[in-house]
Image 1 (spheres, helix red, strand yellow):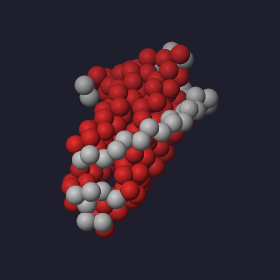
Image 2 (image 1 turned 30 degrees about the vertical axis):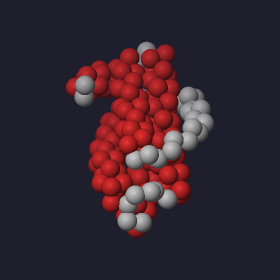
Image 3 (image 1 turned 135 degrees about the vertical axis):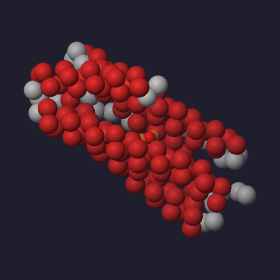
Length: 167
Ligand code: OFO
């Protein structure tokens, strides 16, 4: 079944959002590593790697369905964060934005009878739920730490453990 031009465009945009997430998390990892928080750095490197995998999953699906890939430019992410908490807040906000875009796309594929795409996108719906919960969890913890250096160093160690556990 041939996919509509609009849905093809939406899938390409979604892939671009995943690549942006990969680039943004890489940038945040660099912010942390350069500021001495290696644990948070490892956590964001892991997140960056996962976002690259999400982009590849979309790419492979598109190739399997004979959907043309359109290269698009990837925006430069911000790096001028005011604090570790600001990094997590930005990440949480972006995850919510990506969730909204997957939900909008899911609605469109359902309404257009694209059942195969609907089944494929379910994986992303679940993944976004998990990623939002993960970022929200860290925003809460960092808010409690309130820039206290000892608390931040403790959380930095916890973030490293979390990064290693997910592997
Ligand atoms: Fe790709 O999982 Fe979030 O953005």
